[in-house]
Every structure is written in C-alpha cells, then in structure tokens.
Image (cartoon, rainbow, N blue to C red; front, side, top):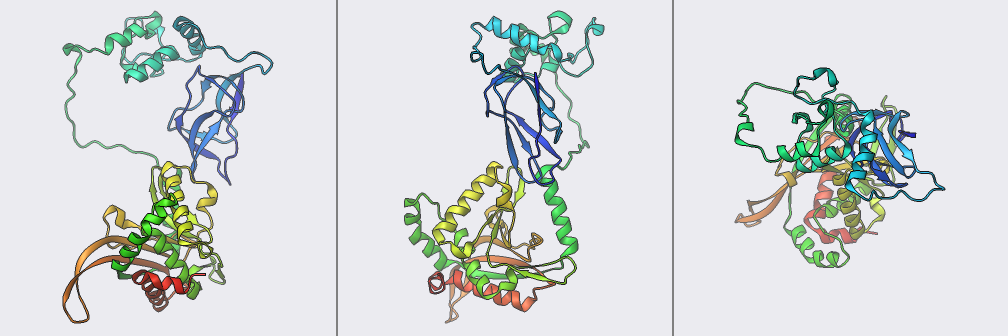
Length: 412
C-alpha cells in the first residue's frame, strides 16, 4: 500500500482544487495513467500515476482543496516482478474484490430505518464500488436509496427497483423563493479577481475610443482565407489585429513598456508578446504570443488558434501565461460594442475590440454609404503613456487595418 503525495506543481503553489477524478476506488491503473485533474490559480493540471496497481482510496472529493506535500490518493502497488493484474473472470469476483476494498469506507443511507445503530452518520450510503458505479450509470443518488442488505447496504437489486419509480414514489416539492447560496472563489477565478483589483487600484487608467472601417480588411481576409485553409489554419480577423499592433509598436515602444512599483524606472521590451483574453471553461485567461515582431501573419494565426484551443480546454502552460507586454480583449464575439478594459498589469495598455456593425457613413461627396464599422476601446497606464501618444499609436494601428496592403511596406 502506498500514498501518492501531491507534488509541488508550480511556483509558490501550495494548494489546488480537485476538479475531476479520472479513476474510481478499486480500479486497476497502469503507470503514467492520468488519475485526477486539479486546478491551480494558473492552469488545469493532470496528475498521472507513478506506478501500476489498484486505487484503494481517494483522499479528496471533487471540489475539495488539496494541499501540496500531502496524500492525494492511495494505491496497492503491483509487484513489478509479478504477472500483470488479471481481469476478474466473473461479475461475482468483481463484486467480491471491490466489496473488500470498500470495507474501509464508512457510509449511511439518507433515510433512517429501525436499525439506526447499525449505521454511521456520514451522509453516504453503504455500497460496494460496483454498486456505486452502477448508480452513476443509472444517475441514481445512493443517499436516497434504502438498502436491503446487511446494515442497510445498498444492493444492485435496490438500484434496479428504484430505476422504475411508481407514481406513489413521486414527491412534489413545493416551489420556494428568496433562497441564496454561497460559493468560494477558487483557482484561476480567484487569481483573476485579485489581479484585477490590484490593477484597478494601483494603475491610473485612462481610455481612448475610436472606430475602424473594416471593409478592406474583410476583403483581405476573404482573399487569404483559402490559402490559409490549405495550411490547416483557420483565419480570423485577430491575426491582422495582432500583426498590425506589432508593426505600430515599432514606432511607439512606450506602449510596449512597463513601469516599476515606485515609478523610478521604465523597462522597454524588444519582444512584442501580445496577449489574447480568452473566456475559457476555467475562467478568464490571457495567454500571449511571444515575439510577434518576428512572425508572419500565417505564424501568428497558427499560434493564436493553438493558444485559444488550449485555453478553452484549460490546458495552458505557465509559460503561455507569462511575459505578456500588451493585451487584446475581443468583446465583439459576445456582442459587445464599447468597453473600458482593465489593464493586465504590469502591462501598460490593453484594447477591447467591439463587434462589426453595418452602419451609415458619409463619403467624400457627402453621400451616405453603408460601412462595416468596429469600435475599439483603449485603456492606458497614465503614469507613462499620455493621451496624445495613445491616440497617435492608435491612428497608426488603425491605418494598417483600414489599408492592410500598407503592412507589406513595413513587414520584414
């Protein structure tokens, strides 16, 4: 028997949330098989098994907070000199083995019977792992079943009977109002809350808004879309925004700089590490594309797609989340138009992209025409960026987007 100790899985991380167990008690596993998914304040991490054997105990339930350097699960390690674990030949053998393993689990049915002294008040029903597995498959809550076995143990027959409820067993629950519940803020969501609070209260923000005519950019994307698809890359508008931003940063390095805490130094970065705010399943994350100034539009598109996919799966690495110098938030994909984005400190600027709208505008002859318009909203760190500089930077960025062919003149 051996406990698996939760290792140090990141810089300074002392705890993590158990998101999902990928195994069950009594299950045979092999070396390097994923056992559990845990959430740190930076990413979702899979913990693999160090040895082959049988899972005998899970020390935490899903949603619990596990401590680094403490046992996460226990397992019976297979003797490396013995033959591989054999599959049980009959269902009866499975039940017998799993029942023995379940003897360490104390549980109780949710409804008292005349033998209350034979049960422990743990809130769980007495049942073997095989019965628990069947209950999950049938979507039956074991705590609601009165077991017919010894000391109220739930048997398979009890589950079969409950799977076909009669009209008499249906209980009508009256509707209630005014209720509330409290949930803890954990993982990436907690880290984001603290980070944004720090940014708002320590960085003096100012905002600049503008609108960009998207018609020529729409045409450029349409012309390039097929060639990108041949390379297996989906081309959105985002790579154009990212590449144009990098080209504009060459002329305005102050936008790609960071100030220290006591406002005594400004650090300028040669690399343009441009972050993308992604609404992932684990919360808002901002991975960044490193060294955009050295990448082609195709390379930017590949990397952007890769980071967005990893973010939505909750599988970004800490490297993907570190070292950003400026960020883009696309509120338009959710239907937003104008925003006042919060700077992703210690960066000095962020822009929010609104949705594309078909709106009337006047041409040079004062005739009304329909134009595809996108509103963009900038926030800057007023300690090192003034309003005039931000407007000039935005105007250059905007010129590349409204006339994409001009990017060719400055692309290395």
